[in-house]
Image (cartoon, rainbow over all chains, first blue to last red):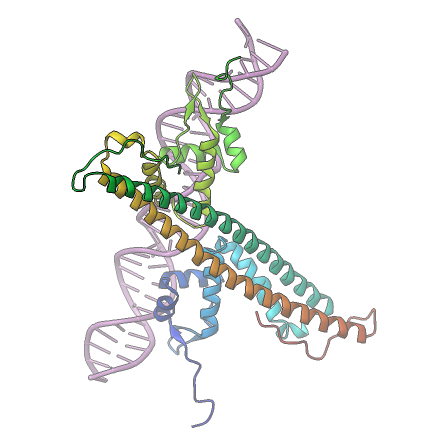
Length: 168
Length: 168
DNA sequence: CCTAAAGTTTACGCCGACGTCAGGTTCGAT
DNA sequence: ATCGAACCTGACGTCGGCGTAAACTTTAGG
């Protein structure tokens, strides 16, 4: 029982797909595009996804679904961050200037993403306000219909004189 | 000069498209799908979009871009609301029961949309938090690089001993 | 009235993001 | 060792949401 015994629990492609709610095909496709390569493989060559891989997959999906990027754009975003994350392995290759450039690029991407998120948040807030206003109108109309209904002979279907105007 | 003189200012298809930032093809496509029919036409049959039409177009786009619905789903959403908005013209056709059903449907759609918006808002908030955390890490790294830089002989490019780990 | 610009219909084209099928290989529980 | 389930690598299919081209008509300013 040495401490290296606990292999990092890795998932098979089907399990990974299920967990995130995508298909196996999607995972293979992302790999084909260079977005997500499983960091492990079985002896026979089957993909094994680590927790970090799953995180990355979730990230990809959020960029896709929440922010509406296509997979090419997501690739560029991830690349910028990967490069920076590899700053230590790139240690011998990149000089001070190169590392600064990489950092600046990552910061730039980060700025843009945050700006985009803020924009989306604002638009969503507006939409929410409109939806709530509409819900309020619905409640008013419902109340009017109720009062009309009570006033009428219960049991008989009848026309009410002039229902309130309902816009949208 | 009677008061009927001011024709409701309507836009030609190109103007409408420009204003909302889509193509003419898109407008015709939406019409083909039954999502958006211009409420006016010229004598020769050219489409004329009123302000209300533009509002509807914007609505369609928001449902598409912000909430991620496809055009089929958007059609159902709009239909539910249209029906209710027509509650007065449907006056003779629909009985009390029918009107209540229409209202309930609209309320149901509204509930789901609001729920969806809330979910998106939460996910965006999470994403924003992560982005800000990442930005903070970047600032730390930048500061460390700065101090390394100052400590070194200015003008010579050199390797620094161990740059701080940068995750993500 | 003339004419360029904008609009109309019809129809084929395109591309991203997978779905799906075929034919062979690997995994892991028994 | 076995055997069904899961995985592998191609490769082709699909579908939504338009783009684009062609051939013709309408619009509106001079």
